[in-house]
Length: 91
Image (cartoon, rainbow, N blue to C red; front, side):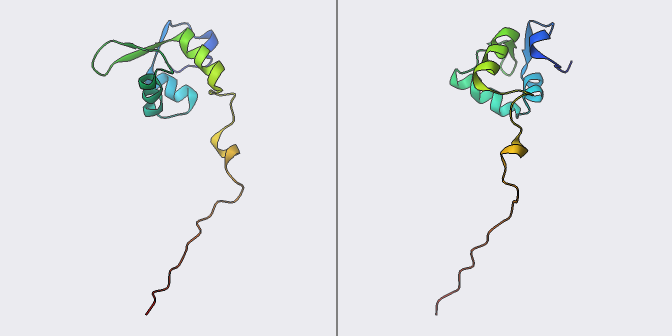
C-alpha cells in the first residue's frame, strides 16, 4: 500500500520499499541510514526490515526528506552539459 501521508498512515510499521518510494530515494539509501544508526528499524529476518511509522515521521522532520522537500531537479543547475577536456598527445 503506497504511503500518501506519513503522519496519517494507518499502519504502525512501514517497509523499506514504501519509505523509499515515499521519500523518492533508493532502498539502498534507506538501508544506509539504518546501518549508520540514523534511522531505527526492526529486523525480522536476514533481509526483512520494518520501520515504525512514528520513527520514520520523526526522521523525516529532522532530515528534511519527503514529498515537501526540495526535489532533485530544483537543486540541479539550469543547464547541464558535459565538459570534455581534450588532451593532445605530446610528441
